[in-house]
Image (tube, rainbow over all chains, first blue to last red; front, side):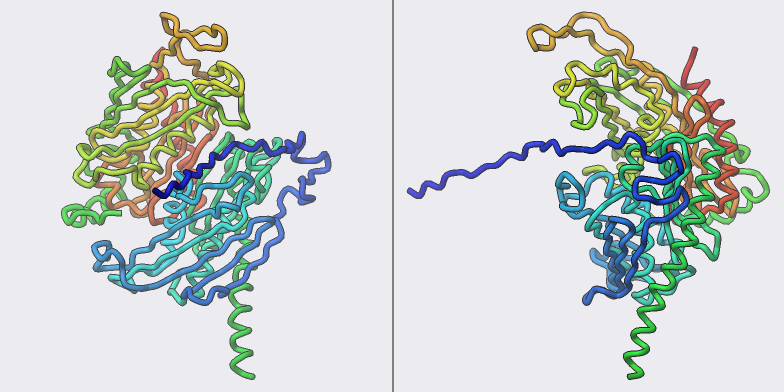
Length: 261
Length: 266
């Protein structure tokens, strides 16, 4: 009889040395990474970087590295989900196991289920779904490295991927968070600020329509602070929108040049 | 999302027209809630429980308290776990199976309100730092779905927490022994959620099922007892303008005061 010993392993919680900074904001209003209160992290966006997808985009915002891909409009599987009058938009936000300090199980967490839903609802107002009845448009967002604000960066990238897939849209959707850290209202929170801060307000916007398509908040803010936070996030969205448009254009400028050569 | 049934499609125009003129199909004003009934202590086996009726919407919340290990980053705090079940008997559109995204979202909105307002004094739920703490399981059970599950669930969760009794215990040679008698769960804040639906560009409060089926978008704001915002969630496929959001914040401030008096008695 073949006797194969059972091999088992059990994961033990590693205590990673966590530097908990005493102060997140310096006296002269600089943040841990040297940013001012109303400054975005450095952003790099590329459009159309995946071969198989109908549309794709990659965004780096600070240490965040996020890929977004769009497949569709295509036939719906399973078929009973198809809608006779419009396309169904489906969205999956997912974090890679290696994207965070402690390995994240690849199975979808409750957080990811919720974010997939709110991201879908943030993107859908921008799409003319009624143009493609009986089809589905699938959006996949993979967070390769996370450092706070991944849902926002994911939306910014996913909207570009939708545009790259040639899907007719009312406007691009751009997202950015504002929040309160050490008593100051700040733009574009990174992970330590989100965890150590008092509040976080992610917001998505269609800038040309002045339409807010995603709004969440956790923490504690007075209504006056909340109003200021929204305005700050809107400012951030507008700055990102410029970068987003440039990224989209630069891909097609490259295509045009290649064609002309 | 399931498409609105045909009857609702027919009513859609009527609902939208009424809302534009400041009225609603069930006779309420735009910022009126349906009748609210809060019952506490409805399940004896649970450490805390409540049943909230919001019009025909009915939600039950049961609280169970157990002992477990704390999260490593907060070794001396208790743990809150919120789960929501959209039980099939509550609506023809609910199906058996693991919680779908609507259930997960509902649980997470309720969770965020309780967690971010620091409603439960989690530091007092520590038995042995890093080893044993109390885990507070908040189970939201939807019994009848007639719209606005979020507000009903948030109210029911708060009412159940206020009604929760923790068993007494003592530590004997590293073992936890349960002693007779109970103490109330330490609660220091009372988060209340107010949900808006946007129909025809107007905001209405406490949408019932048919209004939910025709609404463009949904917005929930949770305020704590000091009138500070502690959680927000936008839902639905439409959008809001900045003005609408700020208007909603103002209405929420008034409404939460009103609702809190109903849920938190005395």
